[in-house]
Image 1 (cartoon, rainbow, N blue to C red):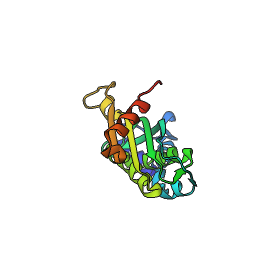
Image 2 (tube, one colour):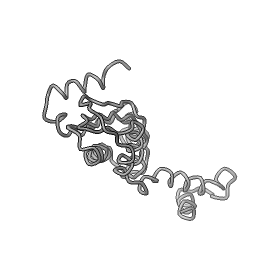
Image 3 (tube, one colour):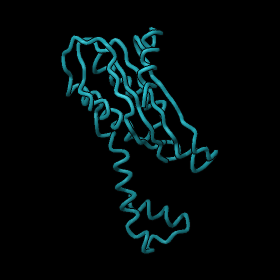
Length: 182
């Protein structure tokens, strides 16, 4: 990978032996490995490792989970916040595992739409809840530093299953909780 990065530096007119660039191929390769480490992890297994039996059937929501991912179209970062909710049906998951699932899928080349759906599907599979909702808000550097150059554009995606999709009052309650006081 480092050789490819050196070739890229040469292709854009840089000298990879210049003092500030000597270690750049190694740093970029390390960063790329970190940004794509999610391929080696199984999100459903992460969730299944921390399931607990409960009687609660009310909304469980973790909001404002920061994430960073990399757009598969330009390999530029996009970053934002995820809000994850589910309606338990006999079991809940350790709250930190919700953030871990976001992190696992975010650490792959992505589009936000797929990322949102993948998180929701993993929760649905691991928990079999009465409903799952995932809402993601992100700023995409491919829209900020190139192309249309719109730094204030926020992309919002959602994936809703079960009661969050089928029951308007449950969805409305979720939206009130997500957009409550910050």
